[in-house]
Amino acid sequence: MNKIIIAIDGYSSCGKSTLAKQIAKELNYVYIDTGAMYRAVSLYALQKGFIVNNVLEVTKLLAALPSIKISFSYNLAQSKSETFLNGVNVEQDIRTIEISNHVSKVAQIKEVREKMVDLQRAMGDDKGLVMDGRDIGSVVFPNAELKLFMTASPKIRAQRRFDELKAKGDKVSFEDVMANIVLRDNDDTSRTENPLIKSPDAIVIDNSDITQEEQFELALNYAKNIIG
Image (cartoon, rainbow, N blue to C red; front, side):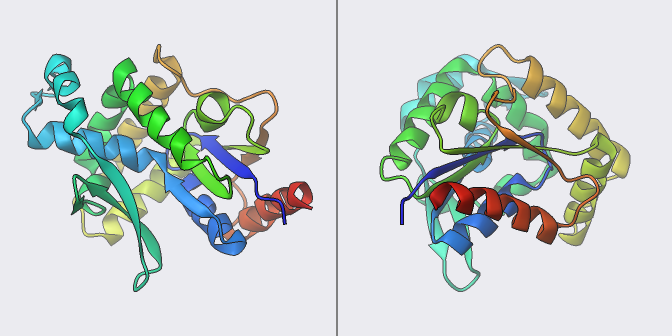
C-alpha cells in the first residue's frame, strides 16, 4: 500500500488534532501535532521569564532557540502521543489557557517558524504521516498528497474549547475563551510569516454541523481514495 502525507490545516479549536489522531490510528500512520510544538516553545518562554506583562522578549527567545528540543512519544497506556520539551513530558502544561494566550505571538516569529518547519519536514521523510497545524499544506508539505482545511463558526469553536477546559477543571469564562478564539484567528491570518491560508488544492471541511464520526468517515474516504 502506498504511503502518503496528509496535511490538515485550519482555524483553532476546529478539532484538527482529533481528526489527525483518528486518521493516523486507522491507517497506522505517524501523527505529529505541530500546534503542540509552538505551545512547547511558548511554555519554554514563560518558564524562562521571556514573557513579561504579556510582552515577549524576542531577542532572548531567539538566543535560546538552539537549546529547545521538542520530541513526541506514544503513550501506550493512554493511547496517545505526548509532547516532550527538553526531555520532560509537558503534554498537560501546554494545554492551558495561559499558553493559548501566548502561542500566536510566538508562532509569528520567523526564526521560530523556520526551526519548527525544518523539524516537521524531517519527520515526513518516510511519508506515512498525518500532520496538523496552520501552514502544513501551504508551507511545510506543499506537495502533500491530501490536504484538508478545517473550519467552523467562531461561536461553536469557542463552546467546544470552553467545554474542554471546563472538563479539565480549568476556571475560565466562556467570554475569555471566545476572546481568545477571535484573537488567535486574527493573529493566525494576519501574521507576516506563513499566515493561515487555504491551499488551492485543499479540501474544505466545515464541521459546524457534523459529528466527529461523520467528519472522520469523510476524511478517511478522501485518504483511501488517494491511497488506492
